[in-house]
Structures are given as structure tokens and as C-alpha cells.
Image (cartoon, rainbow, N blue to C red; front, side, top):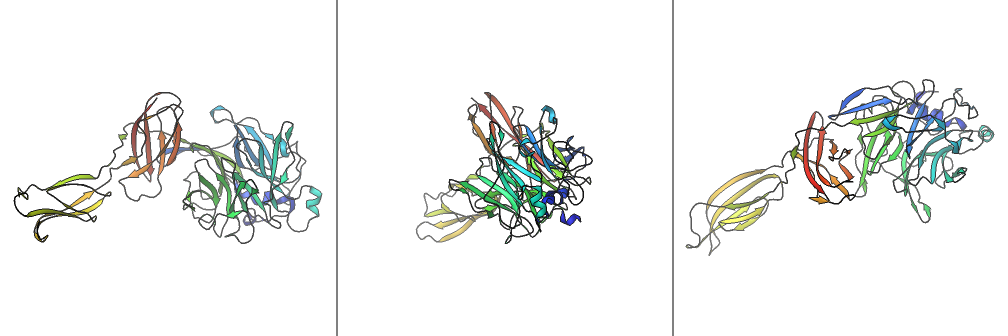
Length: 480
């Protein structure tokens, strides 16, 4: 079996996930590496095994769920055509200090003989969506000629445990559907399918939950999907859709990207930086709300493993206070000409399309740029121009800074939404923003939300990084 096939959605009977997923998750151990001006630490999880693959991390209520083809005494040992164990769903508690507790099989699917794939859990924890082979029994699967596709199944949590999985109506006959991700409100479902009519080998789709159930799946379109493979969507509370792709360039193989849905369109996907992405296959991520910590998988070490990344945020001490640029000026002439005693008047003509009369005028320019200003004397009776008094060029620039706006005061436990903007540097490409709210809370992202839990005066710092450059700004807020 070649490496080209192991990501395919069309896999025979119960062997689907081995072929499809095995190449998705391999990583090496990293030390702390500078990235985007902050230090990015990437390390292998201790739940990984040298003899099995681990992949598809998902976290809910301080428990990490993941898929592995390790040997287990709990499960009946079923092998694929390469004589390797099938993938099952496991879980482990997340402990303080980034540690992970003992790994155990996920009880809700322990009875499944076939492959168990990536899962997502509703925000309230009442149901799970899991990727399973459509054939529920080993005998049925082995009796099929052709392929045993994947489907999405729903498991309800009851007082006595998890109910048996029930197929979703989104499953498509003759094609595979899987790798689900729910939005934070549980109303949107993102998933992958190899159904016909898409852009490539596998595409990402979205369905919306209403009173009538899940809507007809919508292909996310050509900004996200390519002639290659788009896989493992993860919808983040920030509104970012993280996914894996080998069709958007990047570092090589599968890489992890994100895109934001704004004004009815998806933004151009942006690849996560190294060492999260590498020349190998990097995919399948879970990222916590503050975007400074997360898990992902890769095959850079020759075996499927899950890794943890963390930005170790170090903020500049000499941040500059944010300046609110003001482009309003008073224009005046000082030639000594008394236009009140003779029939002459001053006329100002500005290259932004403005004309104004008088020896002194107030004018607000629309923004930064180069403006030409002309002052002429005209006959106030005939309106004819008599002569030019002056003309000059005014260059207006934004202050070089990270600009953001906040109120002067805010209440305890009131959400504060802030958006960063890099001013004065022109087009610099992708920028990473890191926030320090002065209360030991630090976040990453262009747009973030924070809640102060204690009253006081706080200095909010935001640092921007692009290439080898950085700039740091601050504002002060009073929490009442």
C-alpha cells in the first residue's frame, strides 16, 4: 500500500482508517524555537507510542480524546490488510502543568469492532458526533465487495452511559463523510467528504442545525477547497476555521491553515508557522480558546504522533502608549492682506476635493496620504482669480504603532472586545498579535475578548510580530 493511498477516503471495508489516517499523524520532539517574535514550544505527548499511531486530538471538559491503533486488551484485536490494528477512540484526563493522565478506551464505542475515527462533542457535553465505518459488524463488512465508506454517527449521553451510535441523515450513499467539528454554539457542523461534484479529492462542507434538523451540506467553496485534499476541520471560538490541506502551498505535504468567514466570504487561508507546520504532513489540530496552546499531529518523525504546542509569551517592557492620530488642522495665511477692506478673498483648494473661503479655515483630512494645498486670492465681486499666494505639499502619516481602542472604564465581569491594527508600516503581510491584560491573562489573536474579574487600573499591552520585526503599544483601563 503506497503512501499516496493512506489519505484516501475510499478504503476497503473495516480497514478505512488505517489507510486514510495513518499518514496524517507523525511528529518529532521539538525544543523551544523562536517563532513570530514569541517563543513557540512544541513537544511530543507522553501518550504517544513508538509502535502505534496517535491522531485527531479533541478536548472537552479537561479530557483529551484521540484516535490510536495501539494494541488493547479491551478491544477485540481486528487487523487490516497490512496486519495492523484498527484505530479506536481513547481518552485521558488533562492534568495541571500540561501533564496527561492514564489513557483508557472511550467506553461509548468500546463495543465497535471496526474503525473509530475523529469525534466532536457538543458544547453542553450531551452528545458526540463520531466517524465510524457504515458497516457495524465485522461479518457484514467482510462480506461486502468494494468499499465500506465512513459516516457520521451521533451518540447521546445518558445517566447510564452513552447510547448506541445512530447515523446522521447527512451520510451519503456511495461516499464517505467524517471528521466532524461543531461550532461553539453547536449549530454549525463542519465535516469532510469525498462526494462527487466537489473541488478535489476531499472537500470540507458545512451544515446548519435548525428546527427541521441539519441542512443540506454546503461546500465551502474554492477559497477553502482545492483540487487536492482538505481535511480535519476545526472551528475555533474566535471564528477561525482551522483545517489541513495539501492544495494551498505551505511548507510541504499537508499543512494546517486557518480562514475567517466575514461578509459572506472566506478569507484567504493562512498557514500556521513553523515548527507547527513542516515539510512533512501536519494536520488535525485542537486549539484552546486563547490560541496560545493546542494539539496537532504530524508524520515528521516517521510515525503518527500527537504534539502539544504553546507560545511562551514574553512581552516588551517599553511599550509606547497608543496615539489616536488626528488629521484635523487649522489652515491660515499670514500675508497681512486685509481682505475685509478690499474686494478680495482667500480661496483654499485641497487635493482631497475640498474648497474653502477665508483667511483661516478648519479642515479634517480623510486619512493619511499626500495632499496638495493651494491658496489663491480671488476677486470677491467677480469671483475671478487674481493671483496665487502659496501652494505646498502636506504628507500625513499614521503613527507607527499597534493601534487598538478601549473604553476608559469597564465593569467587573463585563466582556471587553478589542481588535488590533498595525499602523504606519504599510503592507507587511501576515501579522501575529499577542495581548497582556495586566492581570496574568494573555491571549493571542487580532481580535480577542477578555473579562476582568477584579476592580483596579490595568495596562493592556499588545505586541505585533511580522518577519523579524515587532512593535508594542499599550492603553490603560479602569475596571470598576
